[in-house]
Image (cartoon, rainbow, N blue to C red):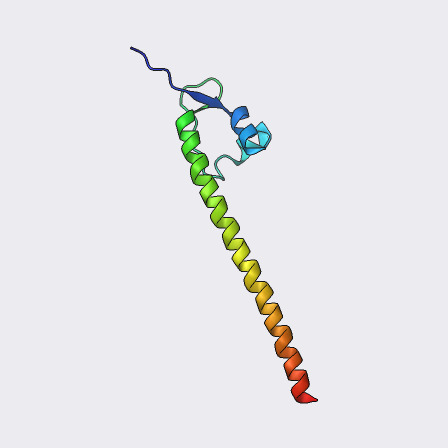
Length: 94
């Protein structure tokens, strides 16, 4: 009994990411994408490996967004405090 492995193409993956196929192929190693299946004439990936990667990638993107938000809030609060401190120093000097 032969079991058929479900696969996806680079074009299908690029569509899911909202990228062009060429952009996906350039960025795939940079974003930690799993290796393509060996001995494939056209690049193909195991559907399950792609699904697992998408789950992990979306969690990482959420964490990255949260980290960026925290950094922006800290920066905003720092500016507010510095402005208040400066205003207070000006009142003391006057």
